[in-house]
Length: 308
Image (cartoon, rainbow, N blue to C red; front, side, top):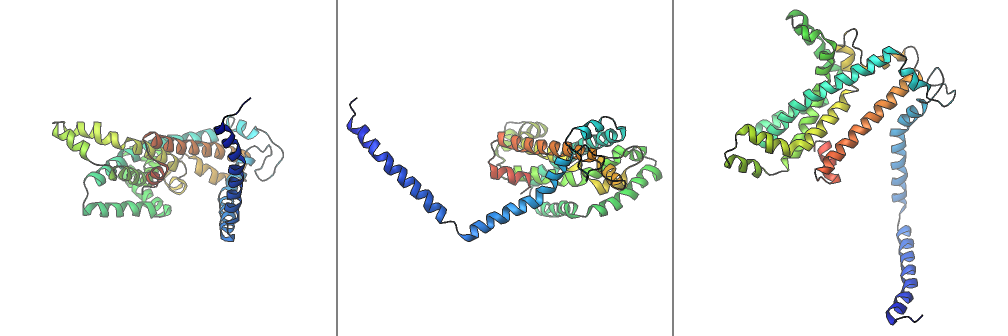
């Protein structure tokens, strides 16, 4: 078949282009200094240090032995045991119910606080952020010691029987830190957005509650959903506060694990921990998906999730 002059020139240029590409790859590889290699190795080592214990727990959740540290074989016996032990089922159920209620409380309070800080700036915002930061950095043992006598005072001295309920105590205790997190996230979402839409809604004679519901809350909704999911995951492992404020019959999962350590960890502990880990990862993935569907970039997603 006859070839046109253009096809002949393109085919002649292909070997040269391939050679140039290979030469460029070799130069880029040669440019990697020892510091780049060292930082790469260090980064891998840090990631292994952080995640290797979690990987070990996941692997040992499939152990068929009696004790977690004694590997007897691979199987799903530990997961089947969960269905056979009412104590484990009760602890997991209490943790999930508590985390859900705490997330609802934290989302309601944190959303209002975040919107107020974003839409009504002033000196009070910095004082309020300082209080939220204080809640975030206060050791859990301090919160636990403070909550216990307060719950007893409300439930027994004042006769408010609702504060004698274990679910109510656990939910309130778990919502403290989560409320601060939701406030950060909602504020970070709204601070970077103009308030022209809300002003336009007011100019069109919309009532304040209508503007809040249809404009302000709609703008903040991705952050509200992200804050709810993060609050739920954070409330699952509130161990110290839960150990102090719990009452008999409402033992959450973290406290159950602490008591189980005394008699030796069993594979079913690792099995439930693996399920909790998967639940947390799914929640975080949903947070990223919600923010991505809202049009946020990867940097904005990280900024919103950290409250930056």
